[in-house]
Image (cartoon, rainbow over all chains, first blue to last red; front, side):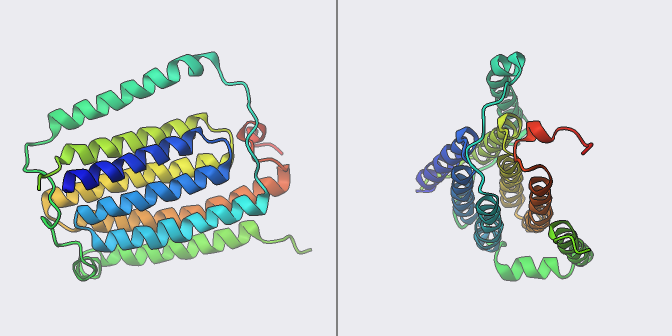
Length: 166
Length: 102
């Protein structure tokens, strides 16, 4: 059951990610990215991260992607025009990507210590209560610093996107 | 009920990251390039949560949470920058906004 769920949602994630890369229209890419994020939320649930799965759906697939889709609609972005890429990139890009992927998989295979694998329910420390307990004790200072970061981001977005008044 | 090896999760994370790198490099639309960055962040988040399971510690979830917060802030500022670029140049093609000089 675990293997089937993993394979199904990993397949959806990879197909959506490939679709994101090959589509030329940004709205199709945005919908594909929502698919990737939704299937990743299911994988987080399989890994025992209930809180992170909920936040993934609410913040990523909800808030951030709505922002993206709004901007795409606001700018009326159409399909992108073809532009001349370099010859090296056209013939070496895909093989080098496969080499990078093979190298990463090889490193994962040789460097990971042997373990019993992932079972649903094998780790129950990802509940909102457990995450909140650690977040507000051991990681309190980074959490507070993050609030300053959010404030700076809000101010930056307002300053950048306002209309010039003069 | 068989268990999924941890390396499968990490390999999936590597595949998603590589696809994000590919999209970042080959796309010409500035919004799609930005979405590829989000895809890379998501791939790294999957690694964090997988290692958190392996080590039976909740710290990886905290890091994922912080990455999401930073991604939200980045999306707000980045999309504001894209709006400003479009307002000044009237295009979304990154080839046409390659010079810093206006």
